[in-house]
Structure formats: C-alpha cells, structure tokens
Image 1: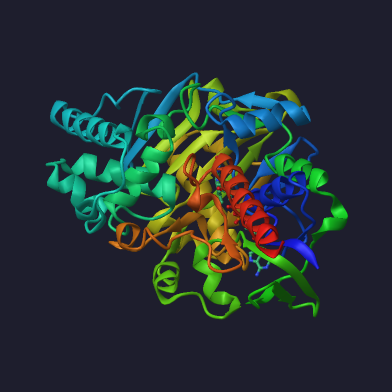
Image 2: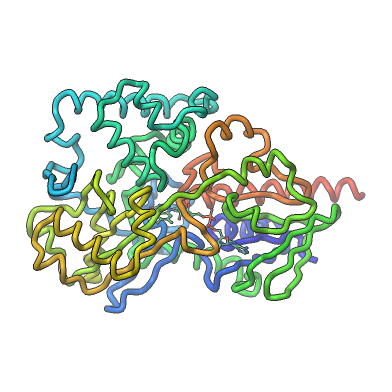
Length: 457
Ligand SMILES: Cc1cc2nc3c(=O)[nH]c(=O)nc-3n(C[C@H](O)[C@H](O)[C@H](O)COP(=O)(O)OP(=O)(O)OC[C@H]3O[C@@H](n4cnc5c(N)ncnc54)[C@H](O)[C@@H]3O)c2cc1C
C-alpha cells in the first residue's frame, strides 16, 4: 500500500506528489492521459521551429515565485512578451480602429472612456481589499454588477471581453463576487490584464510550457506515474483508500488526493458518496469555453505594418489575440483566444470552417490578405472537447455558491483531499496556483498522517 495516491498528473497533482515524496511519503500518481501536464500542452511545430502552447503559456517569474523558482532550477528559457506596435479594436463587423498598445483606446468617446476607467478602477480597488467575497456580489452576475455601477454600453461590452478572455464565460454567466475574488487572489485586475513586467502575461517558455510539467514529473520519477490509466472509482474504506482504473488496475493508499477539476468529480464513482453540500457546489461548477487558434507564419508580417499582433473584438469568433512568436527559433505566430459564447459556436464547427473563420477575421483586423491567408501551420484546441478537461480555465461556482458553500469547497472528506488551481489562495486559475494548491494539499496529507501515527502509538 502506498502512503498517498494522486489522481491526475497536471501541475497540481505532480506538485502534490513531489511535496509528499519530499516529506518521506510513498506516492503513486494515476493519470488518464498518455502525457503529464493536463491543461498545459505544448505540441511541436511541423517546421521544427519550436512549439505551440495549446493550453497555459504565460508566466511572470517575479510575481509567481514557485514557477519562477522552477524556471531557474530547470534552466528553462523564457521569452519576453513583445509589446511594440499598434493594437486594433474591432467594434462591429467591418468597423475597427487602431490605437497605441497599453492605453484606453483613443477612439472611445470621452464619456465611454470615463465609464470604462470608472469600472476598471472600482474593480481594481475592490480586488485589492482583503476579505471574503460578499453574498450580495455573489448573487448578481458580473454584467448586472457593472450595469448597477452605471457603466455605459461600451464598458459593458469591454467587461464581457475581460470575462471571456479571463474565464471563458460571458459576464452574464457568473457572479461578480467570483470575478472580484479571482482578481483579489491574483494581485488585482490590473496585474491580471497586464502584458508587461507588472502582470501575468510577461513571459513565455521558449520550449513550451509543458516543459515545466515534464521536469517536475522527472523529479517525481517515471515509475511513480501511471499514464493512460483513467480513474473510474475511488473508495474511502476508513483506514485506507482504493482506486480502480478503466484499465483494470487497483491501487491502495492511506490517503488519496484528487487533482481533477471539481466539475468532473461527479464522473468518478466516489464511495461513500461525497457529502451532499460538497456535491451541491461541485455538481454546479462550470468550465468555460476557453479555446485557442494558433496561426503560424514564415515571418512576422504584421510587425512590418506597425502592428504588435494584439487585438480585441466585440464581434468574434476571436475575442483577443497576441503575438506569441519565438524569434530566436523563427517561430512567428499569432495566438487567438476564441472564448465565451463566440467560442462555443466556433467550437462546434468543422476544422476547415474554424480555420476559415479565424483567417477571415485576421484579414478584417489587419488587412494584408496576401499575408494572412498564407499561414505555414494552423493549430486549434477546443478544451471543452477534451474528455479529461471538459473546458477551461478553471471551474467557476454557480451564482451564490462561492459564499454559501465556503465551508466545504476544497475541504478534505475523510481520507480524500482535493487540490487544483481552483482552490489556490494565490494565482488561482494559473500554473502558479496549481503548484501552490499541490503544495497545500500535500501539507494537509502529511499533517493528517503524522496525527494518525501518533494516534496509533
Ligand atoms: C487555453 C488555456 C490557456 C491558459 N493560459 C494560461 C496562462 O497563460 N498562464 C497560466 O499560468 N495558466 C494558464 N492556463 C491555466 C493553467 O493551464 C491551469 O491553471 C493549470 O494547468 C491547471 O492545473 P491543474 O493541475 O489544476 O489541473 P489540470 O491541468 O486540469 O490537471 C488535471 C489532471 O487530471 C487528469 N484527469 C482528469 N480526469 C481523470 C481521471 N478520471 N483519471 C485520472 N486522471 C484524470 C487530467 O488528464 C489532468 O492531467 C491556461 C489554460 C488553458 C486551457
């Protein structure tokens, strides 16, 4: 029997396993996919020019201490997000304007600018206030919350883009408290939105973000990680736990850490069933439509025309895009987020239709069709369609639930412990948050087992 079983080899599960091993526990990690990394997945370009990050990509070494320490420890190379050049805003089909990157778009009317800055400053101030989420904010959608602040129509649409790009849902679909709490755990709205050294989109991995997971997995040790082993049932027998997989294996461990998104707990046969209040919250968490289309070119033609590759759109299907080139290896690409409701429709299209829709929008944004329509590679990734993710970024609680179920959400039940980026007290939703949560979960298990040994003596 192992001391600890860990379900899932995403960053939170891998870190939980590593921290537990470092505390002297024996561990088996059981992963459904044939790879580690979960929602970080880097696929090689056919051209041999590096990788496309289909999941998590951006980090900030100084604001995200754990990721920063791993980057140094493993000697991983990073690339600074390129900011120089004009950004583009698409307001309606056939209507777009250019503006200097990093400022409130100059084509907004003075009233709209004032309204946007008022809402931005309000949410920033709220997200810097310590304290738990408020019930009144949890019972109202983010959309209604900003309407109640007196936001003008352009601001309401911009807040919707923030919601789509940050969480893959529209602002009508989840609570203001969840949005504000997310900002609060992640150093405020401005740090989340910033693409420079003050924010979450400052750096990327030259050789793909998944290298973070593969390096942590190497520390855990390949023999301790069982890939291609989807967990089908988990039983807490009181004095130990057991896990069965679809491949017919059974594992036993004194404790089990479950690191899959809470939205998917209901897909496991957990015995005895989780307490009703824990089921009530986790059965109702939602994963967003958080998709990427990565369009690779032979050269960064948009820069030659003064663009930095960033654009935002009220029209879709792409709601926001950035230049994610790695110049050093000749990897020139635009990463397009196709999220929220526009992404939901796009995700149902056939592959050739998805590609056509993205390229047509790039042509509307940048012009220069002769360049746009000559990508050398095109990737797209629909996380909702992934059997072992069912969406992204991280599970979002239903209206009112964040406050109502705070006493059970993420709390251990018997010998079962829960980790995942959704539970992190810092950088929730991010790679850093996943690692942080893994550490916390392993700490809980180590403490609980110590207590048990003492009790047995
Ligand atoms: C498109 C996209 C963009 C993102 N951008 C960023 C970014 O720029 N910066 C950033 O920091 N973060 C980003 N993220 C978020 C980041 O990737 C996640 O926060 C983090 O990887 C989550 O780790 P986790 O361990 O909590 O969950 P997961 O990665 O989901 O890990 C869960 C693991 O459990 C496994 N599993 C599921 N079901 C079973 C089962 N039945 N049996 C066994 N195993 C199972 C899964 O295969 C998976 O490996 C992005 C995510 C996506 C999808």
